[in-house]
Length: 174
Image (tube, rainbow, N blue to C red):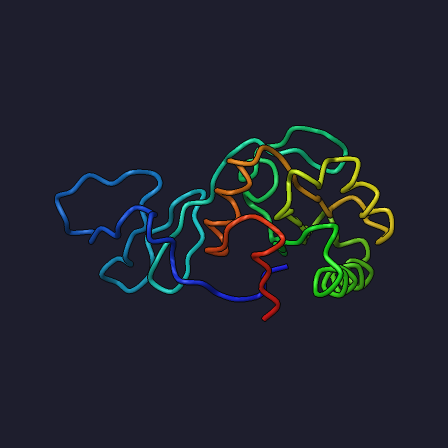
């Protein structure tokens, strides 16, 4: 599970000033408007003065159901987003137990007001059945979605949100 803020991905699109003549693309990271408030864009996370596009890629949930990462799991929702892998024996089990406690504390608000989305950093190992089994040990309820998918898709999600690469060796416990 990743708990640290990272600098934006150096391979990500460059920032463009709102007054620039350069055309803006959906994946651009944009500076705040003159008023100091970031311009609102659908599918973007605002971090200070920057907005980072959320990838709307196809993923699989713990039930093997195909979902769009942004459209189905994040759009118009308050979410807790975490990153983990099921074979982790250090930080991930502890953090997922904390999420299970949060799930309990949220009670009937989970899946209505707040959602939990947990993304694997090891999609080659963490298949939907493996995620489901892991979720069963935590008592995962509706409103908590565990995500896996194709390697390239998960690489994009993990890199976009954490600046890390996939794999068990890239494990930040800060």
